[in-house]
Image (tube, chains in turn cyan, purple, green):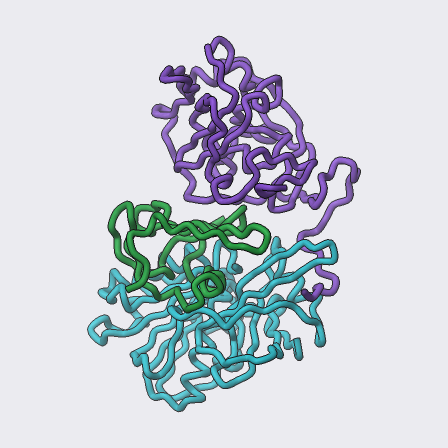
Length: 231
Length: 199
Length: 82
């Protein structure tokens, strides 16, 4: 672990130095394994937050009853070492060669692999049109908020808050449901490529919603993070 | 293999270490671990059966609940290393269900909604060591934790306490159940740390 | 606990098969549904990892690690890969 950066009160990005890192694709993840002194082991998967070509970095959000995430967010510091397996994942990946238009739908920490895709899009100078729909409980939990606020040609970002309505917030509120999708998703006729990531119930509802809109199920790729957003 | 500095896993509560089998840690949580979706058999269709050499004795849900029940407080130990102390369950002793069943079986195979199975010596589900539990902590057993009823065999690793149990098949042979088939221990005594076959 | 999907098995599958497997085609041995590994319903955290068909929830595969050796049971899959 070479550097830590706080993203939100609950999320932190950890920059990793991995010997013989082969480079990764946008959307891939690594499996992190922690070993306690008594030999107890815990393993979790975390999506790579950085773009291909950048050093590996993961963003971890602390789950209240988590076993691994509180350790990675609150305890880990520069110089700490742990076991990493990866990068892995060949299905939930995007590169400019995959085309678009690209629809990225994130629930909570599901934004992490999608941010890798957007960084990759920018760094490779791709002109594939892209839209990110990002559902967060509160404004302060929006990860990469400043980065996502920077306007980029061909990219639209829609953030919706499901629990918060902060003073002065002119953005959307409410869940990513049929209504919001009908409004912001690319029309099915454009043959868009969609990536949906977040808690399991979020992913299932959104994926079903996109198929209802006429999206080709084979072009709606999903990655489920489990009930509370972690894996 | 690098040790992760200061990693301790879930918060450990302090308790009398003599109650902790080797390799376990205490937890106040009650983790939900499953191999499949939570079944939802309607009560009107639910039955519990004891099957032996072609004979089948069954109880409906109402019949099972009408049997004399017990409340027991036991420690439970999961093979994934967590142990939870003083858990309180309500259920029917397996002795009550085996009472009057003619057999000379030495083993049982518990079978469940969803297809899960686990094997045990008959001796380990009798003599006051096992229950068909339908209540936990004073409430009806949550479906996530095996409700409406699960097998409860606290002296063995908790994968033997089969969730969503629907019956016991009495057998002459020790047929490996679901996890046992893949290498988990046929008996599973936490005090001898019998997690895997050969331990 | 909500189940995950086949993406969560990416690392394990790569170790077992020596290749990226989450995008591999699957045919369910119970209902015949065609999908990909990544879309299977995955249960982890217990004694082993279980992958089930998203259509019928039939058992596709079980992975259990015992003393550093991974036991792989694919009998619920009529086909894996092309």
